[in-house]
Image (cartoon, rainbow, N blue to C red; front, side, top):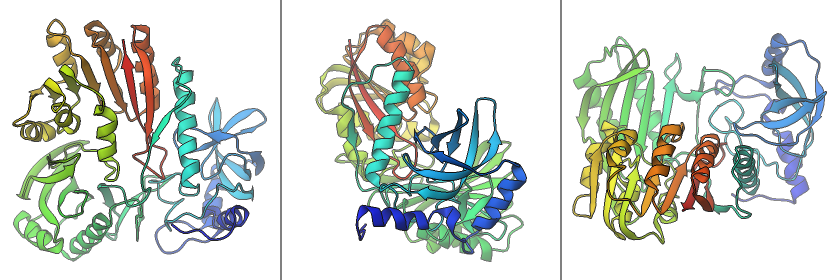
Length: 465
């Protein structure tokens, strides 16, 4: 994205476009005046002039009022801001910016018109270089606070920070308009654009929403999930309803498929008290996703890395330079890492329990040295801990991390090398502390920025005994 003028001019222009310095349009977001009125209703505190100190995990930035920590979204380190406290807790407070008094050169004008109202992005007001520095600082501080000494150099894996998402999930407001949940509420903020998503996904969401509005049915879908391949050549859709689906399925699917030319398959999912259940499908149950030199089968609802620009780089980061007799890939998903590991290990065991991924995992590993095992990681480790010790173990757990029992078993098994792919720095720090205490040493850490414009970060850690 081209930017004109010097750093001071850009910072001044961006400060003038701060979400709380202008009225918002008809996109469902409240105006700055309405936002401030709501804040005043929540608290009677007077505005405070604060100095923003540093970023904190979760998207906000740290300031202090009379020594108390205050979390401030939409600010930047080094800025002076006038803020109003909107929530008081025992150990900290949350504030909203009323005015950026002195902006930093790192402040830029947000690309998306919905930034500040939509809850999807937290960092669009910062240059991309600044975003990466925020994440490195947060990662280092989180690890060291958790008792893990980070190496002097944290490598960074990054790419184009826009149009990267291969998956989105939109909700629908009462008028049937697609949108995301708000930054400070669960309400749907209707959108007219989403610059971080693959354009084909946004276009498909608008087309589907128009169809839903036209369709005369007793109930409309509550949410829609869309997933496309990196080239935007094929797409899968999951339609979610609150409670029992009362949609005429044949007519509905028949209308949706031609409405979105890239759509290869659609499923209808009932969500009852938080529990999803697929009740109908039409078309293909999977698409082929070209990554790391292979066409991976990815089914409805299966986990796959979300950044279409960085999938290949992440696979390289995890697998390059790794070889030996036996490797385990735990939480293997559809086999993104296992497929590549099969090229340099005599045997690979890929472990996955999610039904949405296990069918594709077996197919993606066909004809290689890798074997798919349908099991939970803990179940597998208990059964395999007395078997042949692997040369390498790759773990890519969910946000909750590995946990005490899994790290204990991994330490007992004692693979020569381990690679930990994490999407949460706090649980990563907890697990690394246990593994380092059991005899592993951290060889390298790479920050993989799979989620530009947001506070989320992925980390790849190589360990060795």
